[in-house]
Amino acid sequence: MTDVFPESTWTPARPDCPHPQRWSATDADSTETEVTALVAALVVALQPDYVVETGTCVGNTAEAIGRALLRNGQGQLVTLEVDPVRAEQSRRRCDGLPVTVLGRSSLDWMPELPVDFAFFDSDPVARPLEFRRYLPWMHDRTVVGFHDTGPQHPVRELLAPLEHEGLLVSPLYLPTPRGVCFARAGAR
Image (cartoon, rainbow, N blue to C red):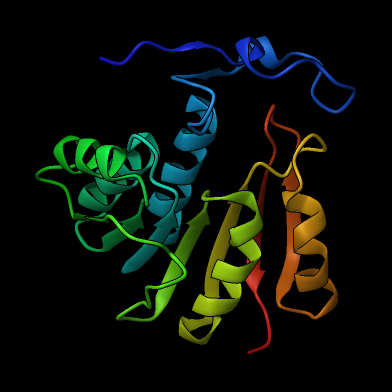
């Protein structure tokens, strides 16, 4: 079991999220434990066949998605991580789950199937680029998530052009410590 710490270890309180200590995380780079559970719950609720995650980190969310897909009885996750040590750690962690961990750049890879759900959590500047790259594989039912959309991160500002172009439909920005957004993929 990996140790978890109060999210306030890394993220200070702010008006839209005044109690970051109510969330937890294993480290400063990994998604909050509760947000990971939300992503996994969306996978259970949406029943996707093909899921893409960028920025695997140490595999917390990849494992949760893999367990959700296993519970669903179908589906696969492809997750991308550029750090070879983290990619290998994630492979071991996800062994036996319907998860493929690729140790490569998300911007050099293309999906093999239509993307039903995607969670973008790589380099913040790359996230809108990844979305645009994978957009041709998305469809009317595709749901996407972006981590680190809180005001202390640049991601929300970088997503604004996607919203204005109609590529992100009905974005829902949630006030978690690091921030998370879920939306539908728009016009292609």
